[in-house]
Amino acid sequence: MPVGRSDLLKDGPAPETFGSLVGAGINRRVPPAVGWRTGSVTPGRTSYHPVMKTSGITAALPAQDLGRAKAFYTDKVGLQALESDFLQARDGQVGFTVGDGVSQLFVYPARARSAGEFTQAVIHVTDVRAAVEQMKGRGVEFEEYDTPETRTENGIARMPGGGEAAWFKDTEGNLVGVVPA
Image 1 (cartoon, rainbow, N blue to C red):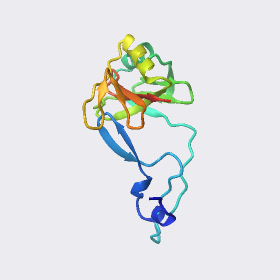
Image 2: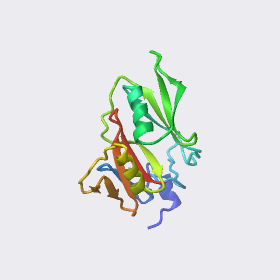
Image 3: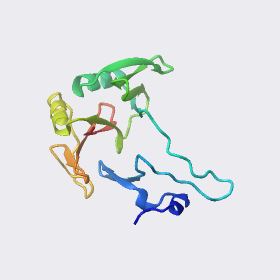
Image 4: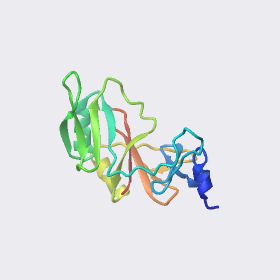
């Protein structure tokens, strides 16, 4: 059933406007990326705002050992890493960025270790199977799942929309996904 304008102005999103993101055994409901708007007709409350436009999104991951994390992302995952004074901690440790400048992954110094219980960042690749094989060849170990939502075979899951995805934990315990671009 199509969603009418009155449905968009009710408090909260209309169920028909949601898509489903399934990954790492977790089923989360998320709004679609384009055209979704919500608001409220209640006096004094924020109402009907357009969706924010972005030119990119950056993920940030904690690392207890920056040297170990940097070696993992450059040597095993195969990404370029550049130190970033922007990510300098009080103790003088300097974090780094991974990526091509448009899409970046910030790795910053942290005392706490990530639990890695949910996907914290995703890497978009042209061919998931080829990327997984390349990373496996360099020593990356991929997660295996066997849940009603996600079932992997050799580290690769077939997703409901027909694509494939895979997940690995970095040396700091962060769970990172690999998905089609």
